[in-house]
Image 1 (spheres, rainbow, N blue to C red):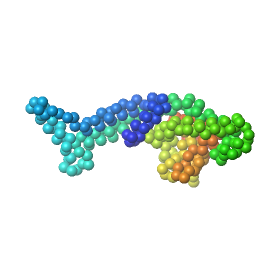
Image 2: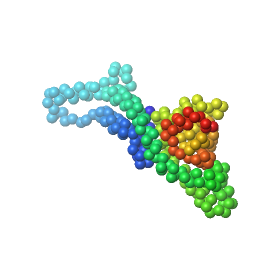
Image 3: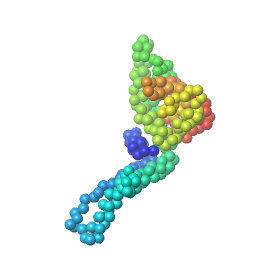
Image 4: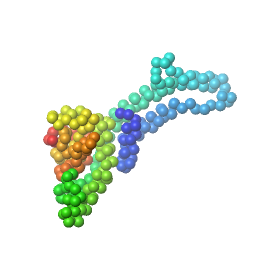
Amino acid sequence: MNWADIRLFAQLCEQLGVQPPAAITRGIELYDDADALRAKPPVQLLSLDRDQLHARIVDLSIRAHDRNGLSSYEGMLPGIRAVHDDLASEVRAEAIPELDRVVTDLQPDFDRLSRPLVIAAQEYGFTSATTSDDVIERADENASTAWRDARKAWEAIKTIVTLRIRISTLFDLSPTRHEAHSALSTQILATDQWNHSISFAAGNNWSMGAGFLIQGSTFAHIDWLALAAGGLRLNTPTEVRAKLDNHTGR
């Protein structure tokens, strides 16, 4: 875990109106408090007594030391970096038990916002191969409305999807990279990506291989209409782990 990712995770939670795990909020505060120690507060030397002057000299000496050139960080930085690293480990350990709650808090919004995709796939049979011309040729205003709503739905759920995927990638929770590649046989994806359809599948409509994906120029993206044909649901890491234990996806 790095702190840029931790901060982004907290920002996504706040953007979606859900409370980040308390350990993350507190950890960011402590990170900033530790980092503030790098600054050298200005002092009016003429106002200092003898003991205060000596304390100032000691403080500046500590801040300027470089361990005889053995460290790439001077002064306070080795201690600050060590605290930051230890703090990240503690934040991860304490945040993990709250992450199912973060997902369940978002489930009602995900259900509501993704509903147009389900309607488009299940009621009108739209797929990723459907074109606007195909819809126009139906001469069905309800179908046209469903098509437009489905196109908007992906944008509407994008932030929730991003947060859910980050829960797995940042905290190494199901579905993890190891689980994905352990489950694959001949359908191997690139090592820097894996299929997250299981995180958004209502039933067994998920894959750890190339199923339910649209192969893009660089990355594989979820085929939301294919996934929606079997139903959509925002699944917690615990629920994903249960699906993997049953291992009925494809």
